[in-house]
Length: 356
Ligand code: IPM
Ligand code: MG
Image (cartoon, rainbow, N blue to C red):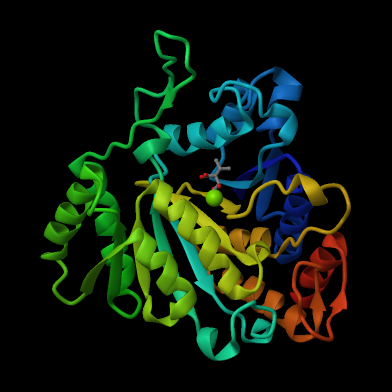
């Protein structure tokens, strides 16, 4: 029996996560293959225990085999210091569990080729993987915070920092991923301006000598942002630091038609991973049964594959999603011509039904 920690979080989180649980239960037939334990996180953690990552939630996480995470954040917490903001829960979980490698596959479902804002000929056959470093960079660097000047002007700083060993370990992960795909790796940096990026480029190149069969290229992040919309199919695997990976993966998601489609897996040195949609809590559409649960359902499929070695079940879930889209069923975020638009729950029901 696999123990799954369920951290739905805020906004649309509590709407989309139950759809993925529904799909996992439908897979489990008797419901005995997985057990689920829910914990409060983010704004929900603040409400329940005055902590974005309450100790009780961390306990659930620590005794689980994998974590299914929804989304955190809401405007009402914007004024809190960064250690108490809902997003702090995510940063702590990623760091405390050593989840340094974030996999964000960007794949176009052929059924959705007309849902993208890009021309079909630009995205046809799109299949790339973004490997984002998740434990370092400006997200964690110190010093950080307010440093008002002596004459009272408000000022703030953050520190972008990478050590060679942090770059090395994510580079190995990315090269290995490229090996199992089309053997092309594009490393992202801003080495024309940043020392951190110069080190990044240097270390990734050194690691590349161990992978002569993988074609390594380097691209500046601004230019990569442009290439992603101009000719995205040139990319196989992209490796980027925490901040650049965050930004480029949101951009890349829109190639597929909606940010509501992209799953992610965060992994460390063992199989215990955290799985979450790449999108946020979307407070503007929360509580309205409008959110697309597909990214979360596909995150659950990644969990089956990567944490539980249940490849067959992962494929069943992915095929069920495709079958539903092929049947012309879509949530409102998917501008799919001629589709029958359904809500979050009905989409979850349809995917679960398509498993049968
Ligand atoms: C993501 C999100 C998070 C991040 C936020 C919510 C802290 O944007 O997972 O991409 O920046 O990592
Ligand atoms: Mg992001």
